[in-house]
Every structure is written in structure tokens, then in C-alpha cells.
Image 1 (cartoon, rainbow, N blue to C red):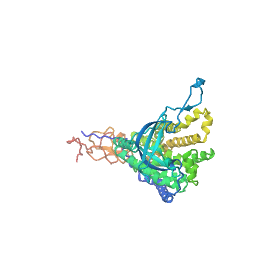
Image 2 (cartoon, rainbow, N blue to C red; image 1 turned 120 degrees about the vertical axis):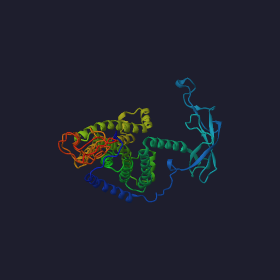
Image 3 (cartoon, one colour; image 1 turned 45 degrees about the vertical axis):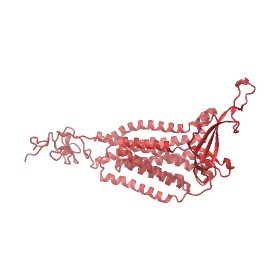
Image 4 (cartoon, rainbow, N blue to C red; image 1 turned 180 degrees about the vertical axis):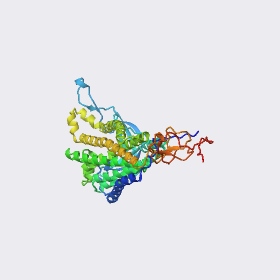
Length: 489
């Protein structure tokens, strides 16, 4: 006996009608061409050269390694370690006093790259320092050419190439093992996203282009490439792309409104201050809005793809469902998604700003003062504007997907357009999902079902059924080997 199986989850969406494909292409193709034109017009030339300020990340950096670590008295090397006297006036004084017996570490560090490779300098590590050195440890050192020779080099960071590479490889293996070919496509999309960010978005902003326009063009390119690369060229992906596009436009409008209304400058810390000093022509508030758009893009893709897939799966499960029923069922899924995603966004931003929130708590400032300070207000605007866009993307994408599958059904792509099990059919019989319509009493001759070729093992026929057929058509005879049937001549 031949068995037919169907697994709709994770398989490509059934082919859409030619009319529907033309309608969606009429929207997305001009948009894709506009994005391509924007990439060409805004593509940056060579990165503008500027003199190093010698401050923070703008310092020259080289590699170095620790060659020796030894213990010394802090007083002998001029490191004044403060010791707190007994509290409450129990001693001679409550003021901090030097600890003469404190032991420090003195690390000898050798520069291994750059024009001064081979030069050595020493670094003193206090007993309460959070950073410790080991012999052979690789470091990143900053170079200050205007400082005295013995102070020109200083440790700025650790070299973390090996652990970060190992973590990236572990991530890639996990994605491929679980996602297989879809996982490989996701990794490729991730590489393309980083390439657009590094090769286009950042240099174009430094080149003087409007950060918001650059973010819209670059983010749209990332969206289109990532969606179609990961989920294939089909109507379901196109619906997700349209939902993402409309939601991005909403985020851009709301972000522009509230950033301007709140008078947010985007210049709130040392890093943004350094950018503004080095490149005063960059619109910092526009840079803030660009960050809001790009930061929302990844979660938007997740939400819109999930909602579009939910509608298609519901339609596969119940081909006769109306637009209203499909929309209502998919929105129940979407509401759960909204609750989890919004909470994720808020906690992610709160976690990133945790040290700052801790400082505000120590300073014993009120919630209103903290929330309306510019640094925290930026994060609030970023979170809430992005969350509004995410919330709006659910009904937008769900409604669009429900309309598309309903319109597709009306224009000939019936529920029987793909392989699948035949409800109530005899094993090995000649009844299967067809492209025609049936009006008979037999449920197999309902919309999209009809008599197909005799002996079709999967019941995948392409005939048309009509009439009040309460039983299989006449002309069937005894079984042949393998479960097929033949017609009487």
C-alpha cells in the first residue's frame, strides 16, 4: 500500500498566481531599484583623512606582550596606595593615609609591532586593580608621541583574538548543525549585513552624507538581501519584506518627531563627543535616528517573517478559511510575539545602560530626573519608538499576508496546488488535489479537487471534478499489483 505524507512547516510556500506575483513585483521591484540607485549615489570615496587627536579610540595603537612580572613595594615605585583609617574616630585620623607596606606588581612590557617594536616599558599594577598581567600575555598599547619618552606607551586593552574567534566558530557550528542549509544561508546573510555596515554605512556617514538617508538605504539593502537569501524568492518572503518596509518608515517618522521634540542632540558621551570634534559636519541627531532604524531592523525581520509564515501555515491547515479567520488566528500568535519581543528590547537596552543606572541610583536622584536626562532619554526614545514599530508590524504584515493568500485562492491557486494527503481517498486511488473546481456532494470534488490519472500513488492529480458524485467514477475494476486501479475499456 502506498502512503503519501505532507509536511507544510518549513517548506516553501505554494506557487502564487501570475497575477499576484505581478502585483507584488510592481511594488518591490521599483523599491529594490531605488535602493540600488541609492547605494550607487551614496557610495563613499576614500575615507577622509584627519589628524589623530590622541584621545581615547583616536590614539595610535600597537601590539605588545608581557615579558616579566615581579612584586615590588608600592612606595618604592612611587605608587601611593591609600589606606583608610579606622571609621568613627577610633584612630588618630579618619582621613586616608599612604599604605607603606602595600605590595604592587611591576610588569615589563615589550612593544611587538610598529616603528618602535622592541622597546620596553613598565606598568605598575596596584593591589586593588581589576586588571592583572601574566608573562606571555598579549596586550594592546596606545602611543602618545607628544608625551615624554618613558610615558609614550601605555596599556589600553587586552588581545582577545583567540577566545572571540573560538566563540564565533562555536556560534557558526551551532547555527549550521541546527539550521542546516537554512543556517548556512543565515550566516551568509549575516556576513552581507556586516559588509554593508562596514563598507557602506559607516564610511558614507564619515564622508558627509546624511546619516538618516544612509541608514534607510543601507538598512533596506540589508533587509532585502537577508530576507530573500534566508527564506527564498517567494510571495511569503515578499509579504514579510513589505511589512518590514512599512514598519521601518513608521519608525523613521516617529523617531524623527520625538528626537526633534525632545531636543536630543545625540552627543551624550566621550565617544560621540570625539566624533563631533573630529567630524563637526556629521549631524549627530541624525546619527541617533540612524541607530534607531538599524537597531530595530533585525527584530523587525524576525516578527514579519514569523507572521507571514503563520498565515501561510494556517491556510495550509484550513484551505477554506476566510480572510477574517486567517487574520484573527494569526493575530493570536502575533500578540504572544509582541509581548516577548517588547520585553526583550526593553531589557536589552536596560542591560546596556546598567552601569549608568547604577550611578544614578548611587547619586540618589529621582526617577523623573533620571528618565528625562539626555543620556537615558535617548535610550527611552530608542526603545519605545522601535517597540511601536514592532507592534505595528504585526497587524500590518498579518493583514497583508491574509489578503494575499485570500486573493491568491480567488485567482486560481487553490489549496490543491501542491502535493499532500488526500482526505478520505482510497489508498492508491486516482483522486487527488487538482487545479479545477468541484460542486458535487463528494468532499473530494470540492474546490481544488478532481479526478486525476488512474493509479497515481500520491493522489496528485490535475483534473477537474464536478457534479454530484457520491462515489468514485464508474469504470474502476479490481486492484492491480501495487495497489493501483485501471479503467474498464
